[in-house]
Amino acid sequence: MRYLQQNLVSEFGVGGQARLSKAKILIVGTGGLGTPVATYLAAMGIGTLGLVDFDIIQQTNLHRQFAFTPEDIGKRKTEVLSARLRNQNPEIKIICHQVELTSENATGIIGDYDLICDCTDNVDTRLLLDKTCKILSKSLLYGAVRGWEGYVTVLHGKSRIGLNDVFSESDLIFESQNNCSVSGIISTICGIIGCQQASEVIKIILGIQSNLDGAIFCYEGLSNTSRILRLKKTEN
Image (cartoon, rainbow, N blue to C red; front, side):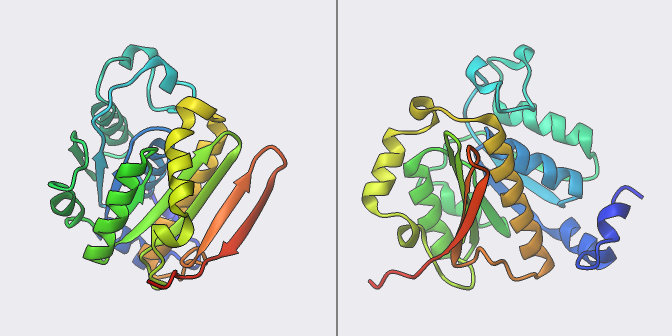
């Protein structure tokens, strides 16, 4: 009965729920994006969720990372979020990777999962995820937010688009210098983009072709406008 409403959706069905229960999804970053992505995937019955983060909860996180409370300040994000998710859905398996993702451990961690969600705000980690997912042929659900803007795309899917096909080196450097701690962020944008990422995960698990595989969804909350831009693979 728990999943009745989503099982009634024609593209989903009981067979779709079985696919979700077998899926293993890795979420890298458990902050503003990782919180909604993990919360919705857990509620919908993803079989295994992996959480990668080594940060602790700070007061400045609370305005957008709704799984955390003032009493959680100073605790590890993965520990608190995993406890919330297990309480919400005790049927799923949650694995905490309380480490910084590095070139030494990335392949070992990522290799155990079917799909990877990039919910980080660190360019070095994004580049490492992109490189590792390409090597391992893993689809990478990329999400980014800043101010009133947000972006979602599917990397290393059927279109074989990678991060460098979406953003130039100068764009990535600009992002590293102007993350949310510098330019700020509207919390609701995290929710919108996180939900988009989670939806793309579900579609891929169900075998539904994503229109963001080879394209990027761009959302601007101040004017309530969105658009999808087609991407072209850069010739090496």
